[in-house]
Image 1 (cartoon, rainbow, N blue to C red):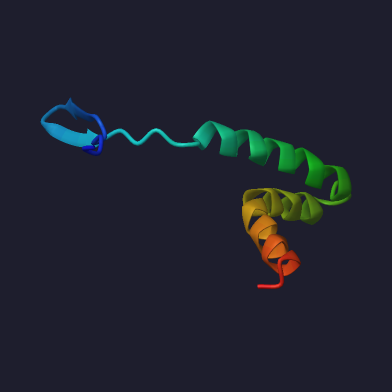
Image 2 (image 1 turned 90 degrees about the horizontal axis):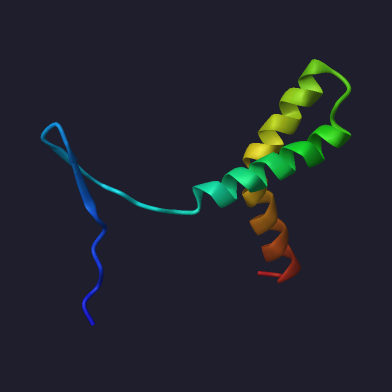
Length: 72
């Protein structure tokens, strides 16, 4: 079977590929993680900044603990 190529869109002489991904799912995960971390880190300004940073990198925490659980 031939692989499907991404659709190309043209705008003012430039072509670019449209890559539909899981951006919406990541956004929902970010919002959920932000709410979770803000619940625990809502004391001072720097703790709120820490909560935002943790929410941005929560997939890294997930992979780390998953690999640690699997003892890889």
